[in-house]
Image 1 (cartoon, rainbow, N blue to C red):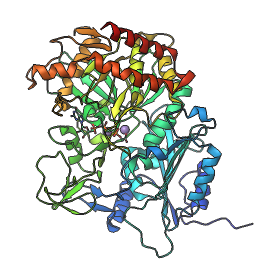
Image 2 (image 1 turned 180 degrees about the vertical axis):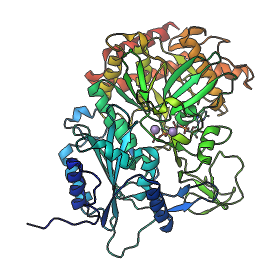
Image 3 (image 1 turned 90 degrees about the horizontal axis):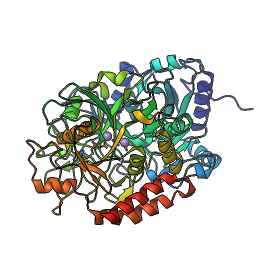
Length: 608
Ligand code: GDP
Ligand code: PGA
Ligand code: MN
Ligand code: MN
């Protein structure tokens, strides 16, 4: 019999949780790190880790922003890798036609081989975290084991992390085990690179046992396992089983001139405007937006029959390019407070960050690949999916309700995507089922948030295509089922709308100014809910009646407004075969009411 492995730190566990202890030991014995560090989430720990990363030139300390750092990844490790993301349900049918699948035992065999010795020469950090407030009745715990100190620093911003979590977990709390390795072991004496990662990547989910195994990437969406992996893919399965929804949605609080409060959740695909809308500064007088979340919403019915949303995250992981004092001043104010990580943006000569969209470029920058950059350079200074990672509590317009574990009752759900043509600025669904149809057929041009081609139109149901942890046909059925409401009372469901900020004119420019001006669309949404704004019926749903959308003081021609709102029957007829093809992928799993919605649309278009 071989002696038990001794790894420094392994036995200094500040917990008596037997399952956690056994799992950490098991992983350490497999991956062979030089030492184990149990993270406490303290200020001192943050300082130790960031100092060490600065010493190793993984991070550069920014001179112009307090306690903030600049990171550059390997140029190959810059986005989520959907091709390498797997849902390993026992039954392949449970992964459905939209996910990659491998049998759990087979995936575990393949990945165990990869993990064997994969942390040699590195430290394995134990990161206890909680998604959503620790004060929740049933806090949602996870523990990430990672050999990336960059991941530890990022997790401290993005989740509630550390000693409080371990304490609250006690000795028997359920947690989601999240295993992460960059897949770059070091031989004795071997020099490390600034951004270790592997050409072999797996982002694997085991929905039946509620486990996550990630290998080979250090990029946020692939490595901060509390975010997409837990809070969307695994949580969506929990929601299916327990009657709630885990969605790719921002949450905002909107207060109107008469003091009326509405809570809005909105699902847009990655890099299609969630963070911006969540922090919007309205251009119309009397309206106020406060932020609750910018990426993920967990929604369940309250006893009063309303649908309540909680943001499980603790930070903002936002697209950097395009973020500016003009477009998103609240993000700029949040970042000015410091305590942030910036990844794959450019750095100015005086030690600040810069990216495309931030006004006039300085004469000289260091670009995201570490090269000299001037305004005459051929490539952008920042990667299009470069990100800021910053504490949400620094957001100056954070709503008080953010910390409430019960969440906020949602009045309106917006679906939206990035489409140059066809989709009008705003459409109101006729009812819940029609709204689910709009979500299920949501389409958007691909962005740099995922590896692969940019600008290709694809169906992205509820903006969840890369994040549904089970069969998308079952997911649609779950959404339809939620339409029965709480205890059979559908009367208090949110009203559903569909928006498109990205429609373009023939000359390629955006027809709608977007950003703060999107408050005008929110106003129309509120007035529809309150029954005070007029709408016209069209084959695809209700759009603003002439004059009902507040465009006072807006620099927009009547022609452009009409084009932004236009419902063109020919463009919509051209969508039908694509929707048929999309729906056919789900076979028997597709709820028949969605086919009925499509038939209704066809009939209305024929009559148009
Ligand atoms: P998220 O990834 O869904 O959170 O999207 P972001 O809010 O980070 O926005 C992604 C990109 O779209 C950024 O470059 C934004 O500047 C841009 N964007 C966001 N909202 C609008 C808008 O209303 N109009 C236009 N034209 N661009 C927008
Ligand atoms: P985003 O979040 O939606 O803000 O882009 C990251 C992602 O979805 O990859
Ligand atoms: Mn996202
Ligand atoms: Mn975002």
